[in-house]
Image (cartoon, rainbow, N blue to C red; front, side, top):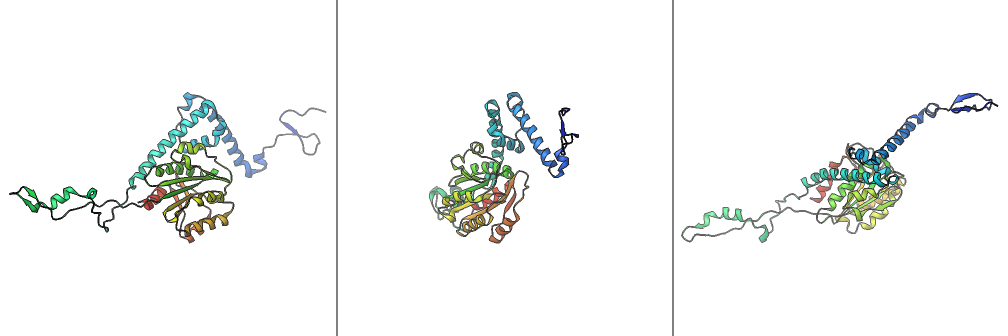
Length: 324
């Protein structure tokens, strides 16, 4: 029998008919785009690994969210020089984003003055300049002495801070942008006085990242992007941390496409009823785009805790409204 040439295949009937290897994307049009995306991703990753292995080329890379996503997904496949260069790029990006977010936080981090409440009459609040100015009419030229019949005090900002801020982040593949932004944001709030910040990341399992919350770079290196989603695992870690509900804020960042939807929602509703401030967040991306499971969206709305979505500035504003 004549050998089958390379690149040709025996026909399915076994009659010896020749044809080229089938193009799956044409035979099954629905998977064509997905196959193309997989191939493009493979090429992109392989070239990126080659660039990372060359310090000169790696230094020319500009950190971006898409690049950081690739690095975080591929970090376990890197080693040596390539891994060191990848870490340096992640560090650069984290520092740049942190600088921007820190500015956002600082804009309204100080509590607003509440002038309906008289200032405390203590020495540290004494407004010496105003006291002198208001009592100048009591100046005695003969005695060269100023008689003060009223003291004036400064109002100080009234600030109430939660004893605990718990940030729960979905680290599944669709939430990379949110994971990066919220990890950095958590570290910034962790640096504020009187705010005890805890960070939990989850997919089908949950990981308590609180020991590294002050360092978003180290936190991100410990994440595992991708996989399924089971928020009940994260709730099991979060609930024991709520010692004083009325002094606790729980920020839950996810697209809420969950495995155990009803069970998770009931535990969230119970958390809200306990007195804790519960803030569901659908997306805190750089672009402001993202999708949220409509089942959860409607139930959060009925609960009185509508899903917050959009640019990360919205979450910064929401948190500082509570902190101020």
